[in-house]
Image (cartoon, rainbow, N blue to C red; front, top):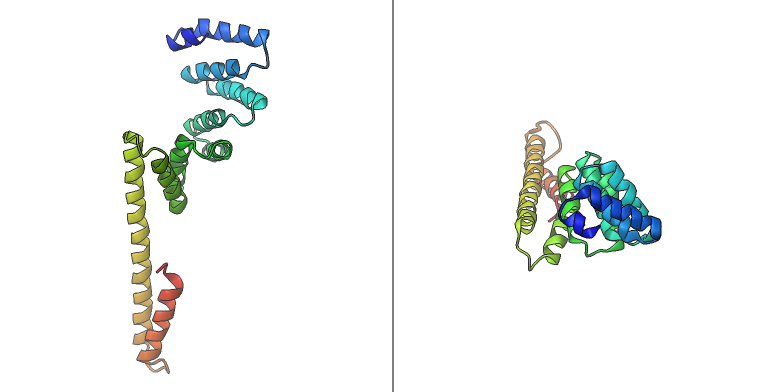
Length: 193
């Protein structure tokens, strides 16, 4: 079956894998291969069904969780994808592709600190493999840093604006010194510095 899968003769590969399952239903590699086969054919529901059978036989099979997550992501089911990527990492914290894809999910959800954490872990795990994904992860971290810096800048602008309003307030007992003290307290309480 593996040979036919490799040369993309999917019908013959499918027949061999199904026969292998009939001979030994506990051999999870046949289920995984059928999952791969149906994935290549973009029959995601059927592929997920076989990967779930792999997990039934071998609950620590991180790649099956990853592949299910990927298919959920392809179908636009981001929350399910996130859940399965996290499960993949629970089985194998070194699963770099799960870190990368979680980084993308969290980036889209604007959960930038989580995204950054997963991109950094991907880079750490793939430091010797400077491919497209490595460069993309590095680029995303730079983009996240800019976004977070801009948010801090916006907070500071808001604090300054509020301080000016406080200082402009006439006919009150608020003095210039009190306004500055309030600003200092607000800045320290709201900032990450």
